[in-house]
Image 1 (spheres, one colour):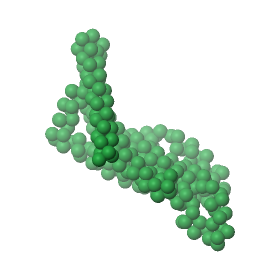
Image 2 (cartoon, helix red, strand yellow):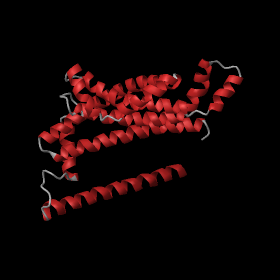
Image 3 (cartoon, rainbow, N blue to C red):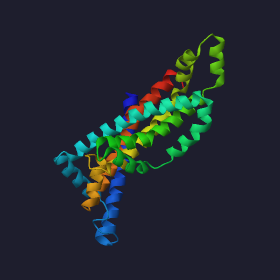
Image 4 (tube, rainbow, N blue to C red):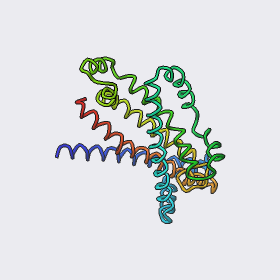
Length: 261
């Protein structure tokens, strides 16, 4: 009962804060647009306008379709990024030659904005789903490679030495020692990789004609509907928060509890 009371209090506090932000936003809109005419109505979104756009996009199910397609592409590209990135990170950690020579290149490529890969994706794949997934993979895989390399590299050397003295072979050391010990830091890398993948997804979708949140955002811009643009931005943020809370936060909590941290 005490836990439910704390949860209810926390929820009400967050709800009151959110309501205060929305009220302040609406007041600023009324003062800046209707009273002082500082901003033009088409250039300044309002909470009431965003709610209206939400109703219109839900009425024809276009927002639901956009969310569904975007999440499907994002998850697909992210899974590929995790597999490729972790494999590359393992190679860089295992071979000193690759760690010395390939890691700086991977770090350099990782700093490229995801939009830089859009021209390549369009030329190679056209305006297709594969083009968007390619941008997601290129935007996230190198980040995952660096994260995997760091997670394995930061495992205390004493763990490996202790396993060797107990007669473990290289495969057992990686499976029974290095991988479990690197999981907490690797999960942080997974979270970062998802953020890169989600942002890369938006870069890919705004450049194509495929149904998705990015394309819905561009439609709002083309129609000079700033409320629709703001609505899509809010949806993008909310999805990122939900995935962090539902997936990565629970995964982190499970790993730390399992290790008594």
